[in-house]
Length: 179
Image 1: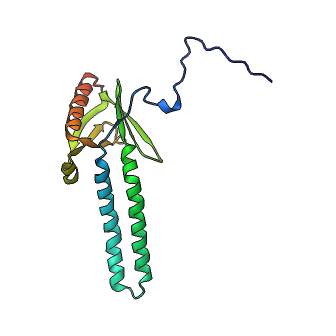
Image 2: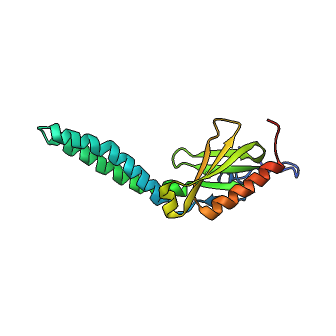
Image 3: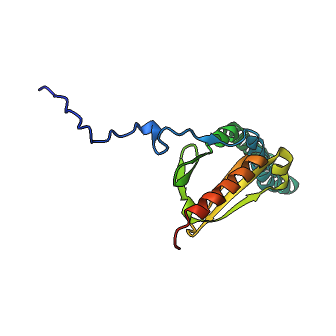
């Protein structure tokens, strides 16, 4: 059995390779690598609070030290795995400003790509907690009419976040859709 090549019609678009979906030729803009340290610190604090308090309580009331040692071992294991993935998680965060919308991407195993149309933006907010302030970073939050959108772009340098906020507000004003 032979297969013949089917000629392409000039009007038929050729689909983009899967590696270029959905951004086309545009490059993903990355957040600051310094954000990995903030991500790591926050996760370490959460794990420590969730693990150290029960461990101390068990140590104070336990006659058998095996259970507290297993808990401490589990905490150390979680901290190590978390520290290994913190920097990779941050590298997975990116955005692209397209003609009609902003694409936002995050996630390692379960990648999430959200398109936020400029005309649907209701609020663009720059927030900075104490840890992000110490690192010179900010989080850009987008609010639309959809409650499911909930896009937050963390780890931007402050000047980059403010410039992006101003640009998005200007684009939203020019493309305002009826709500």
